[in-house]
Image (cartoon, rainbow, N blue to C red; front, top):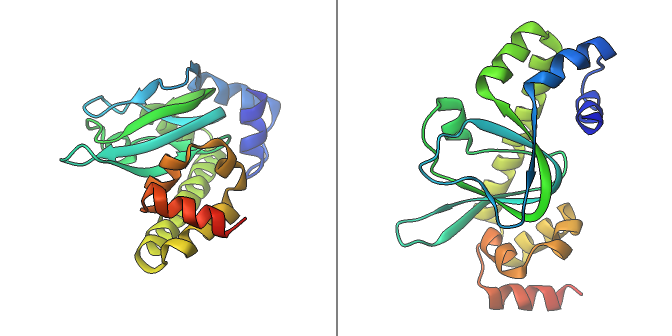
Amino acid sequence: MEKLRKHIEEIIPISDEEFESIKPFFTIRRVLKNQYLIQQGDDAKYEYIIMSGIFRVFYLDEDGKEHIVQFATENWWMSDYIAYFNQKQANMYVVCMEAGEVLCLTLDGREKLSVTLHKMEHFFRVKLTKGYIALQQRVISLLSNNPQQRYKEFADLYPNLMQKIPKKYIAEYLGVSRETLSRLYSNNK
C-alpha cells in the first residue's frame, strides 16, 4: 500500500488520515503469468493499478486476430474502460505477461472516493487525462508514422519494455509483421 501512497502523492499531497480512508477502497490481487484479469464477456468490475508485473490489454477481431491496445507496467492503470465506465460486459482481454500484483478499484469505489475526498477526484482526473493523451498520441502515431518511426517512438518511450516483452507482441502493438520488427530491431542496434 505504500507504493499506492507514493503514486497518489506524485499528483496530490495526502495526510496519514486521508490515506487510511483511501486504503479500504483498494483490494490487492496477486497475478500469475498468463492469468487473465478480464476476458471478453466478463463484467468489467475493476480498474487496476499495477504494483508489479507487465500486462497486455487487447481485443480479438472476428477472425480471432489479436490487436494490442496497451501494455501496462508499474504505476500504470488499465481496464476495459468502455465496459468499466458503462458497467457493461468486456470486449477486451487483460492478461498478465510477467507475474505481478495489482490493486483493484470498483467504479462505485472510485465514485465514493471522489465524493468523500475531493483530492482523489482531482487525482483521477489527472490520471484519466494523461491516459487519454497517451491514447491519442498512439492513434496519431499509428495513422501517420511509418513502421520505422513507430518502432523508434516505442523504443524511446519504453526502453524497459523492449527488453521484457516478446518481440511478437511488440510487432502486434506496432502493427507490423514479426519479420519487419526484426529488420527494424537490426537497423537500430
